[in-house]
Image (cartoon, rainbow, N blue to C red; front, side, top):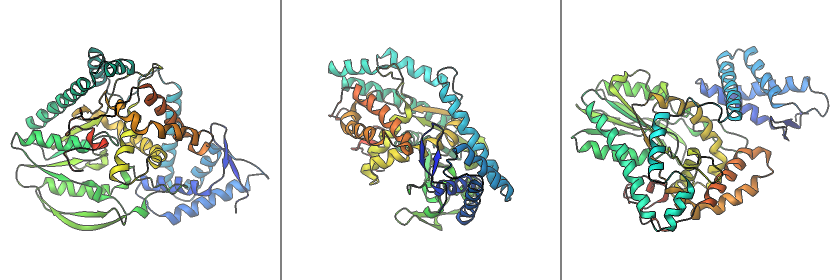
Length: 446
């Protein structure tokens, strides 16, 4: 048992020392560079702890930064330079993000599609849907169905423009990638894109990249038993890339099969080949991640990026955050389709957010087209469904320093949902709406 019992977090909070956090941090860095040796991660963590204890007087409480310094040292001295580099880069990125968050509002983010945002904000303001106050007034005036119709038309117009661009390049295309962060509506949008393009006599073959997941026991796991399967390295990127290259050449490949109940993958399971003129349609979080298709020319790829780029101000004059919209969507979807408790989704969201900030959103500028799936009316449908849960979670996590992220998100979302007039009747929402992917009642099968 370690003689170190507590550590100091960056915010000054004192928490129990858990050696598993060091193991997980090292293993996560190793996974990012292709390593999957948990035993080595454990041995390196033991060396880190030994160094800390050797330099720790009785009752000492090392700071998290001190622990991370020792991790870097141990990785380098034990011949794991690639892992050390990845660990250092990730640590620097996190520090940079903390600085940027502290300076929020003083400089523009590099990861926001400002031109697209301007058009969405202009549309929202023109239709008096740019604040929750305006939305509430329209609901009070009995115009909710009108808001739904306006919002859906705006999304479909965006989608039609993307379909036209794909059709214009169809003679050269082999792949269409539909990418975006979790719960941005990729599945429904992919279906709708295919519907539009079939009218142009284009033929598509879908590729389910979930079958390329590594076995579950190879994924990093935290001290709460929560797996980090949000990173691109959760997928066998090398095999995906090899298969895409072969498919682009017109060759047949054998797609693996992933059994989600067992958390196991079987290789060489399902044959797949593109016929002459067919295009591979790929719906994936990480479709724009460079290593996903690094061996394929951009000339044969169309890259579409999706995000609910809602432009709506809350009563406190802050904008409703897109990540919060997607968090609610995923909670509603997972509780229905994946038997995943909404509270687990909240606790897991820091993994989701960390990965998308590092591996998804920075590559959005490489997209050939961006679609916003954000509907100004959707928060009114969420209020009665899940507000009470967020009120409960805010209280549960208020004094838990290990769940600081969950507390901040719960508190912020609670305030948003409490400020909107709830709408329980969702009959105005079309049965083929992208929102039906999350609230249920869709004509599509997911």
